[in-house]
Length: 157
Image (cartoon, rainbow, N blue to C red; front, side):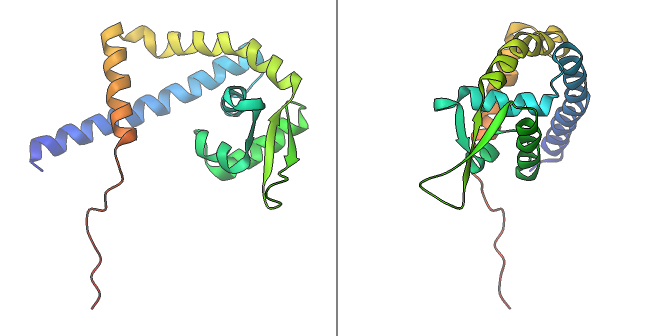
């Protein structure tokens, strides 16, 4: 890889990290002030709302949410305490459980969704043209969808 390409890649990566570090706390504050829901709770509710029967196994939820699996389990416990989610045993696999959105959870999610979208517009999209939004979305999807490649193999001595 050329030095110019390396600099460009590092600059793009740094910009992504800076944007993430800046925007996530802003979105979290905005959503909490407007709805009382932390962004991490909203992320879990968003995934459950999109799922068939408003339920996912904890493993599925861990794969879909933008949080670590450990945090997902903790947040599901918090949502359970708040009455927004309940856990159910998985009859097909006694080692796993489902996280299931409750009617109260669905109502809170639906009430928060417009505020979440407004926050995205205000804190992220407002600074970009429609073409830039499309370019960012396309570029980041390409990155996320690329197969994992091992850059080197370990030799045995």
